[in-house]
Length: 65
Image (cartoon, rainbow, N blue to C red; front, side):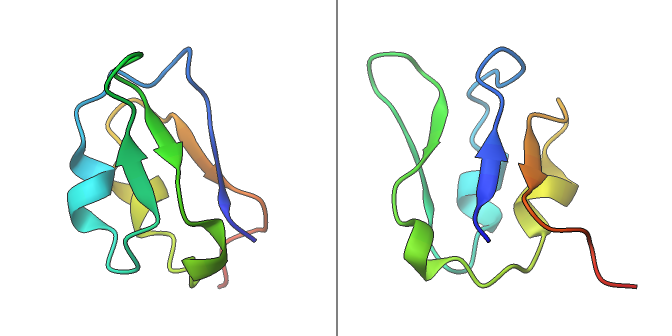
């Protein structure tokens, strides 16, 4: 399941964009917020959730143990 992005928490730093190996995320030039541009490409790696310093990204499924 693709990540959910909380725009209220997202500061547009772009760390998640650069760390996403599946290239799912992009920065909206108008709002300066990250958005899920290519959800079907998501491989559920949880990297975006882990690297977000604002806690703005949550995966829809629980992290595997």
